[in-house]
Length: 174
Image (tube, rainbow, N blue to C red; front, side, top):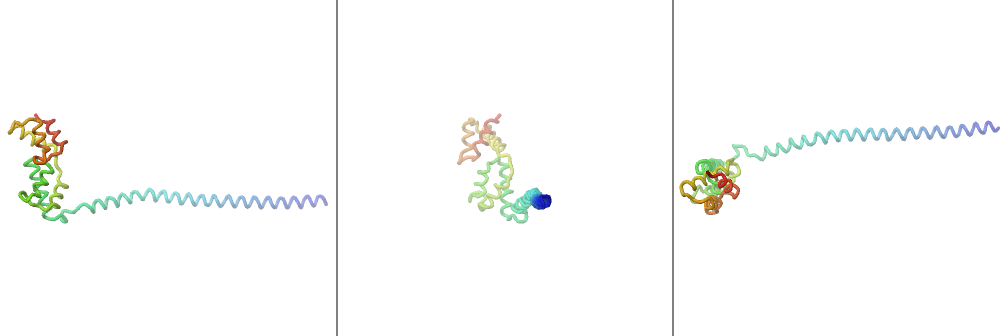
């Protein structure tokens, strides 16, 4: 009888242990499966994150391209103001502010402010070099001192160059 009780207890304990092992195996399998799913989700999210900046960059480039007006979309008056601004910059060595004032002045070109601003925003020129050429002209034709030339270059009643442009001109006078 003792042997059958021991055998019965052994079978019960063995069954419980087998059941516990099976449950533990199933629990371990589920987290591993869930972990694999999380890893797969994480990997696909990583791939999406890697792809997303490329798409965002492409969209940003498209936005920049959209913002730049096509030549056909620019009003005729804006184009004329830009062409006039380039002429003033090249032949008269004027500053940006001086050109804007000349473009908008009723005694000058009398362009609308929007057209003049378009011209100023789109002209590409070496303004420091223009300041230097203007300074050289004052030095040669009027025999002005460096400080008088500087004052004339930055004056709101004069050439309207920036202080940086005027200083460059004075520093590079012959």
